[in-house]
Length: 216
Image (cartoon, rainbow, N blue to C red; front, side, top):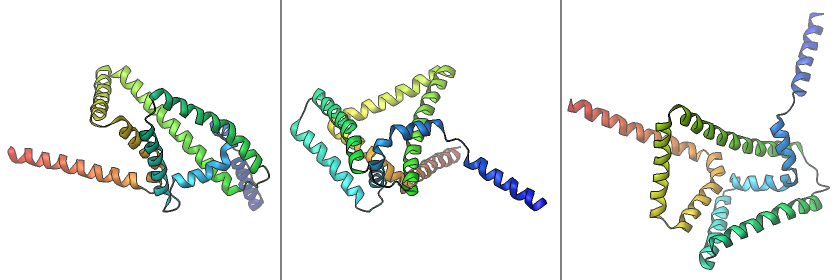
């Protein structure tokens, strides 16, 4: 009887785990992006550098795009208009194309897991943005002077950096970094750079403390 009871308890636990409702935000996001899921998976593979030549392809495409912009020298209004046109075309064409070509294609469990991982990454990004906003709002409410100093310092540094570099070059570097960021994070390069920077900063602080100690 004890074994039967124990088995029934285990079975009920498994059923409870399987019947756990999914995150409503995840469900909503998966529904909104469902028309693009057939393309999101291969794009995600490229962004995460699953092949060694993918970074070169990304850098080449971004460089070619900005080379065209540099050659044509369009106005700011023209650039925003072209971006809007591309977004509208993607929003209209991609769902229709994927529905036509992939309507009968099978959607495997592996693809579903990859799709959920992409959606989870989007939710994590939104959560980071919300946390950063809440942190700034809390700092503004609790320590308004510190908030003012932090924001003025950030904007002063970005203004100084912008004055040193050409606008198109600065935009190119920012877009290139954003495009390469998933691959840098996936392969641990960001973590290595962060750790190296932390070690250098700790070494500088330790060196200053030793100098002060010797001075005393």
